[in-house]
Image (tube, rainbow, N blue to C red; front, side, top):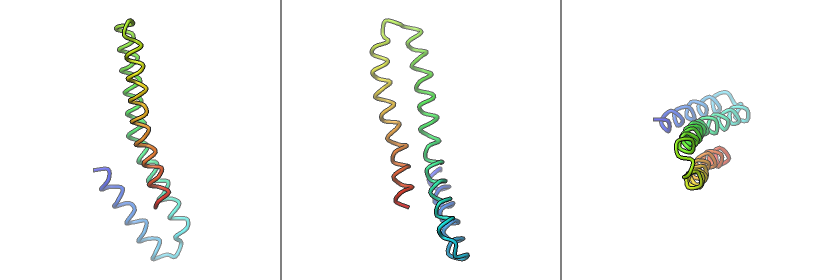
Length: 92
């Protein structure tokens, strides 16, 4: 769903850029939109991950080490999605 919205927005921005001749400023806006929308999911994901990790550590303090290690692996995987969005904004 999000990919459809992003592709539609990029199509509108591209059409406006070719018709008005101001491709530089609209290109910058498009890149910002791509990265901004791509960062929403990882931001929400890290928030949920941190909240549930703290909740699990508070519920069972003896398993805090295992939860912390798993949490850091999850953070790395989630941040990879944000980096893919950043790379996509540079490619466009």
